[in-house]
Amino acid sequence: MQKNLRALFGQRVKQLRIVSGLSQEAFADRCGFARSYMSRIERGTSNASLDAIETLAWALGIEAWQLFTFDQTVKTEIVNVPYAKDGSCFNPGLASNRDGSYVVGEVGNLQRFFVFAEALDYLRKMETAKWKRPNANGNWGIVSAVRWDSLEK
Image (cartoon, rainbow, N blue to C red):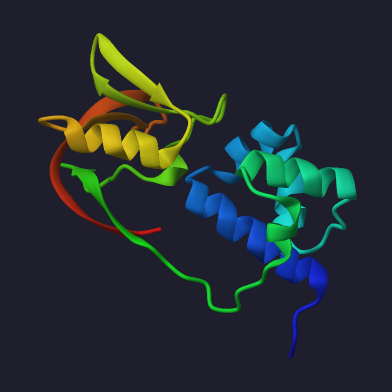
């Protein structure tokens, strides 16, 4: 059964957002949309206006027509990311809810990146990768990598 246009469009937006390394909330903020509206677009339950389509394309750095090039086979990219001692890893879901950024680096020399891939590149250049992430209590702190392993993005 073929998916309707809204569902295909939403799938494509989600695919491109994930590749860009942004959380849904960070991407919604970049677009100036509510996260709930972004969720409806990605689930194919909302009719995006032409203005919204233009905004989505701008936020992704692509032409609007590229949002309508549907690839039925969703490609996954395997990337190596740093893992902390507790088993948590640096991943796209760590984008700040406030501004969509990733904070990496040493205490006193923290760097802020708005694109996951750029933050990951910086971590690769560090002797020991360090990044900010919430602990079990939700408090943000810096953790150090003990190993690098694959993460399906």
